[in-house]
Length: 368
Image (cartoon, rainbow, N blue to C red; front, side, top):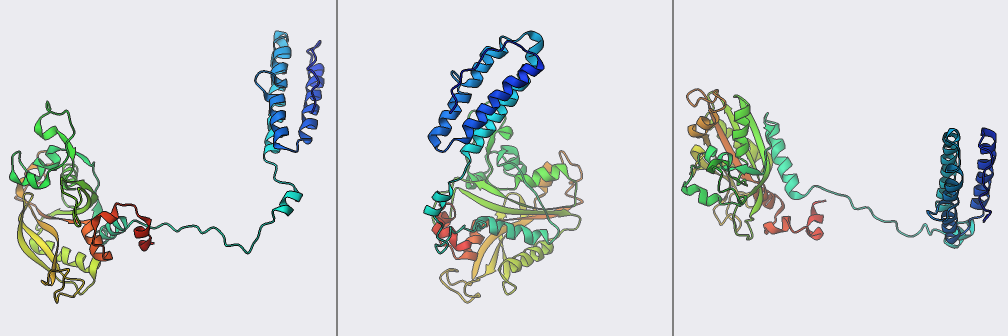
């Protein structure tokens, strides 16, 4: 490897500069051609590009600083070109593959099995959520989204849960700290249902409205085999003129048949939700025993799956504060909501809801 010292320049005209830099480039190329070990490559790098004793650093110190002002531009251009050549020679040396002899010594055995690439798949919760949404999308529903951190107004008050209402206890949730000075309706919390998106949509869009709202929700539920403080919901809202409970029943009956098979039957029982009146719980005939009665349906032949009802006029009144078209005397609508995990557990025969969140590849591998 060349160790020839960098000479001083006595002339700075174009010809002299070309000759000086051509000589250095020839030395760099000759030294790079002899590199045959990683140690030699590292020594070459230090010799030419070292910050303290590198040859290019010496060129900068001797030539650039000593050059007259009118020659600095031409000298700097040639210096940058030489540096690029040295760096390209170094890159080529670092990227050089093993020699033919090394390849012969480490020949590839093509009879060995290759590395298997695992095929990814949707998580069962995501798959179920997308399947539910696609059923309602086929009925003309659009998808609504909204924030997980909501205000008290959108999560509770706008959904007809006034402050102090006992129904709030069933949807206890986490609140953001340090909001004592805010008005009650402006305090932030983690949403307990995706219903706030219904109100946000109505405030922005006059009827008719047909949306389905998938998303993550939070409640202060003790974790057990069928409950989790974090889970997923799909809610729906349909608002127009002359919407009746029969429309609600027909929509949900079609959806349940699309999800669980055409032989599934539905039935409705009176219930209570603050944001709907009348309200109902929806049951489907047991998909495991065909309605005959088994352990999973507690011998009843039916499984409770979701809640629904006609939108309470009080909810329309809240929406009407920003969108006057929601006059409960002129329009009507229905809403429904279902837990995605519950449906996924039924479809895939999962008995423990925590398995969906554990990240155990032995469990998730079943759904590839």
